[in-house]
Length: 315
Image 1 (spheres, helix red, strand yellow):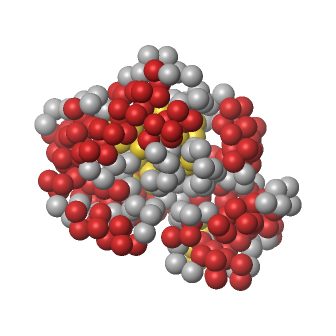
Image 2 (spheres, one colour):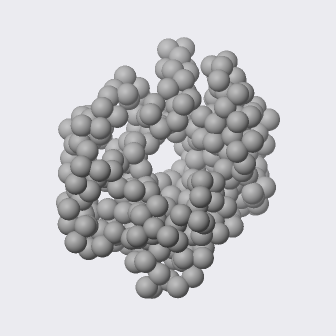
Image 3 (cartoon, rainbow, N blue to C red):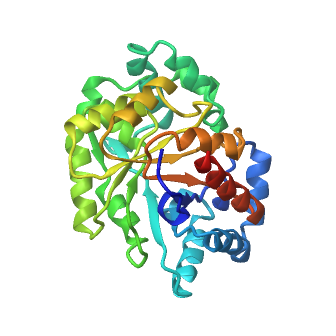
């Protein structure tokens, strides 16, 4: 359990609701996209977090969603107003096989195959995960997709130009940590620590000192990276009482989070709105975390979530 609660130290306002992603329904996604198509609506939510002591914000590169660019513009306006904030932006790792991008369904089919050897329940957990099921055709396409094999692992590469272009978007912003996305899991499974090491080097050469690796398969990825990779500060990974997107199993993810000496930043503490805030934070802050990212789609949600975090830490 952490000591005295200070929102500025431990809470990061997530960006997903602000860019139109609810993890609940396509109708709600559309509602969020409509609501936050105006910068003033985004800014009200961010201002509410600022007023309650939050100074850290998640973000993503403009190409990640239609509203990501507007979100960055609003954050720039916050900086321009003189607020001392810092950002943790996520950048996709564009993994390629030959001249083609790695296929998302084949990538997840690979997790099913390799993790299923050690965690037989992983396949059904991935197929049933409520957040993953928002991907169109998830339960139809995934079982029919061919996993990548070890020979193909050896021929993987990263589109370095896309990485360089992505980093450009954050040059003028106060970034504390840069977060390469959850393609980290795939490169770790493929044992391509050489590519991950080069990625870390390139990020640091561009002036970004801190790096947190995005991980959705904490149970297998964190122990492997702790053993085989250096030069990064920690992990951004799902942590919630329901075990949503805590892979390959909730227990293995919890064990890996508890076992690492690196920093851990939790995401999806509310399991995409499926766990009530007080219950969610009581569970999450039972772990020794360096931070927790939580998204909010209104001023009222910001207030509810932050007040619940404070109450959870008092008990």
